[in-house]
Amino acid sequence: LAGSGHIAGVINPPNPDRPKYGYWVNEQLPASPEEWYEGAAKQEGSWWPNWQEWVSSLNDAKVPARTPGDGALTVIEDAPGSYVKKRIA
Image 1 (cartoon, rainbow, N blue to C red):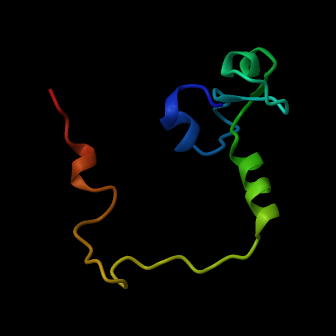
Image 2 (cartoon, rainbow, N blue to C red):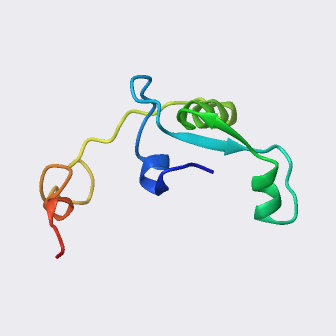
């Protein structure tokens, strides 16, 4: 469970210069989310290093990064895309 909304928990990578994010851990799996949270301990920083360790334990094989435009889909525009920059009033 991460703090500061889904963007902070998913998008923001570890940054020791700005340690404002945290996450909660609990090895127990009680019946309700409330019980889980009551027994959880907050960890400062990003959950990314823990996730990386876990996912690497399942399979640490690496593959080359895909090159945009090499597949069946055509590149429309450079990232992040104009739709990201639009504001809805």
